[in-house]
Image 1 (spheres, rainbow, N blue to C red):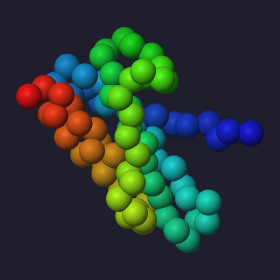
Image 2: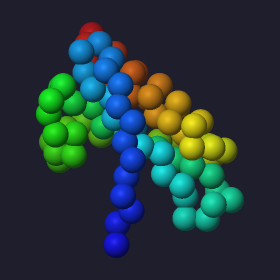
Image 3: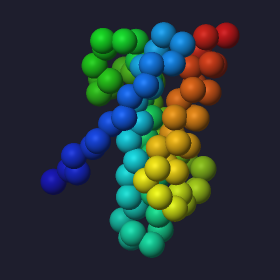
Image 4: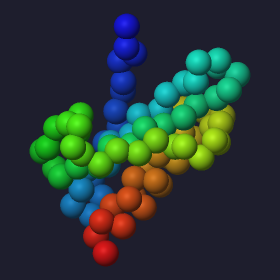
Length: 83
């Protein structure tokens, strides 16, 4: 059974940035994140929307640290789109 994801959402430069923090399989390994970017009002779970995962092999020590890193990644993605 899939875990229910708790998404945090912020509006940034006219785009919605959705981030969820995920605890790794072994709690001692820390936290990770997933980011989704979409236009306001669009279903953020749609397959065609822009998605990223941390993928940087960082083990974030807390849920808050993973969320902060996820939003930083999301903002960078939006900045790349808005060039």
